[in-house]
Length: 459
Ligand SMILES: [Zn+2]
Image (cartoon, rainbow, N blue to C red; front, top):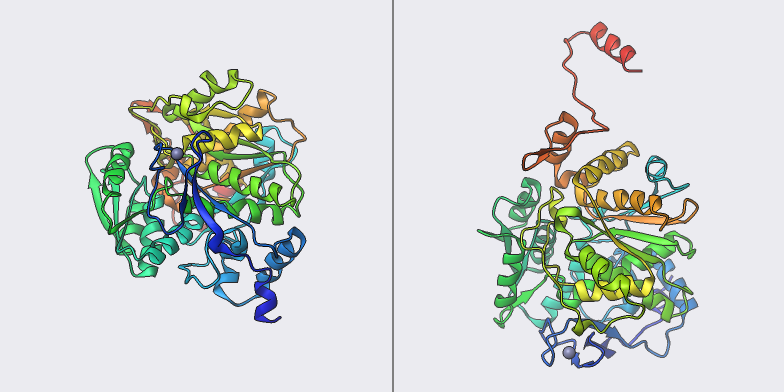
């Protein structure tokens, strides 16, 4: 295999631009401009990559596939392997930890629990820092380095912080992260400290941190790496490409994701749309977003406004009501003012999917069922499985449908939650959460017969 054949077909990534998603505005900006929202109307931005003339879908699929056997870091990364659809030219130095390439598991016990014949789980928690954020961060930090930024910053419930800290360390950038005081897990905090980031614990919630980040973004030395940044979405969209390869290009009927800041659903929607434009798929799977009941501003918006509308509403005309005091033990989705709600809403609506909520108890039990399939995830990820169960019961998903749920974070992101569930000490405020699938540790005498006796009494 020659270097040349691995890299073909080459696309002029320099033809990428940032564009405002508000259709009545449509302003465009170069990829070297350090902006995060439209200067003209304040709307969110997305990246458009204009395909080069050599791009054809069959050769593109072959090139992506061939790279799996290459030793080059750019080919081994499950993000940069799809670089024809990323907004950089081939000479841009990349910042990578060989992210992506995550497994797609069959989950028979989860399928039974949700009422499906089969269910597959795309485990984004198997990324280098243990969450789906890495696929976006490799692209954002590459962009930060390209622009010559000195410091990368983000607000975070923990996963984004850990990811940005790692990629900034990799790039030699300073990194400052804003986290809500005493509201992120010890494991996530430990990761950021270990990667050398300056961790600022803010006396407020995630949304307060996000507000501060938007103010800091005015400083020219600072690069904002939250998912308001459209380059993050570019990396995360490659999950759709990888998933389709793993499904042998047979499209699932439904893709289901937990919803916090809504970058994940935005990115998947964009990824599938681009594959459809290229003719690699002929439709888009229904994209369903699941929120925790106590942090569900997007589900409320969907129920009250959008599901009554026949046509896609103009995004500028929709007013979004933030949740002032979001509450859930699934800290990764404990967000009241998601920055990507407009882009996510557009993606969900165009796909024909739904947005719904699940209770804390449903999330906790679903998480334990995922564990019984031998697969660990953080609590927020389990919202997707709990959501599927609810959508099947409501007949929005049929038993025979092919369904993929995206797990967003690793089980070791929040071990206290897991231990408390199984010990029966999990609670949100004064509300205790019962462990329907509880697996208590046993106190046993230090001898063989005691252990054998216990084993015989437990089947
Ligand atoms: Zn605009």
